[in-house]
Amino acid sequence: MRSPTLSPPTVRRRIGSLCAALIVGFLGSATVLVAPPAADAAETTLGRAAAQSGRYFGTAIASGRLNDPAYTTIASREFNSVTAENEMKIDATEPQQGQFNFTAGDRVLNWAVQNGKQVRGHTLAWHSQQPGWMQNLSGGALRQAMINHINGVMAHYKGKITQWDVVNEAFVDGTSGARRDSNLQRTGNDWIEVAFRTARAADPAAKLCYNDYNVENWTWAKTQAMYAMVRDFKQRGVPIDCVGFQSHFNNDSPYHSNFRTTLQNFAALGVDVAITELDIQGASPTTYANVVGDCLAVPRCVGITVWGVRDTDSWRAEHTPLLFNGDGSKKPAYSSVLNALNAVSPTPPPTPSPGTGPIKGVASGRCLDVPGSTTTDGTQLQLWDCNNRTNQQWTYTAGGELRVYGDKCLDAAGTANGAKVQIYSCWGGDNQKWRLNSDGSIVGVQSGLCLDAAANGTANGTLIQLYSCWNGANQRWSRS
Image (cartoon, rainbow, N blue to C red; front, top):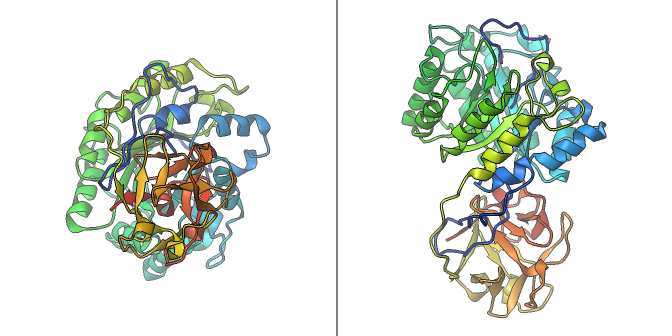
């Protein structure tokens, strides 16, 4: 973020979200609900505490720090969402026109997937950190280059990114509420709309976000201008799913209690909201708790990302703005955030009903199917056109089993990524017990991995496996 009076460094670090593990009844509707935790079940890490209310708590990761074991230990333990700090920005991914380089971005993504984190993408269209070739373009050539860049990056990461910051920081600071006079803006006022429509076509499963700074205070002109744009997009059917509030709070741009009002008003437009780059000068425990409380008070606030792991990793290290000291020790603000996350009381779901019916893949629209209606133990499941036959009728039991034919269970043949999911005679093992989550994921109790349509497949015959949860559409399921 650029505050009104602070000059940013040459390279500005910006953002770009669950595998909650609580068993519930599988209801006869398209929504799977999470049961509330026991009153004494306080979680001990930020990610798990946030997951209690169906949210993520993430951090920005720099690929160059992934060789630092102290850094990765904290990041792996504490967070369940990751944003590449600079590695997916324009200059990093397309240093030469038409020549893409995903080495650093892939390193962050692969680390995240290997450690069970979801990934937010940051950012596709931005006036800053453009490579020299893009800075030298204008008009129609620049517009086409933007479209090509979005298509190229999203094609590479298709199915792997939960949310994309499609456009970043398009409004100017101050009292005008005007668009920023950038080279992208000069291609025509519709450039943001074009970016979002391009992104939707490139990866229909990814959530598309607009992201900005100094838009947390509801009374500010910049906030109102952004609100008017999102409202217009929703009214006209421009594909926008979420709005990111960077939330770099400091002495020149302080936290204000009307931030909750801002989040509520944007959510009322029908978009998710997220706190995407949180850091707070001095790391006030009270302010950190207030920000977390604001998100928890808004059902459509899907998560929080802090912009770095330790103070020494921050783009504003001199402000000591994060939750961990440079030596990796937890600051008082850490405890205030953890306590705020643990204090939330999820709304109890309706009394669960076991129910019997098909389980439909969100990405494919096809059903969880036993090939050929066989009853043979060890048969791997697949996606297939829904047909209401007995080989697609699943019953969720009070013991956490998913049964077919009455006596065969959904069974994990292993605990590693790629382990096949099969039918097997029910015997009560943890590899036959599943947690059904509010985000639509189905998680193995033994492995902690998600029920996954292999290779993001959507066709008849796509095999079903276990894989690290990352909130992809190929890992979300509904009761049809």
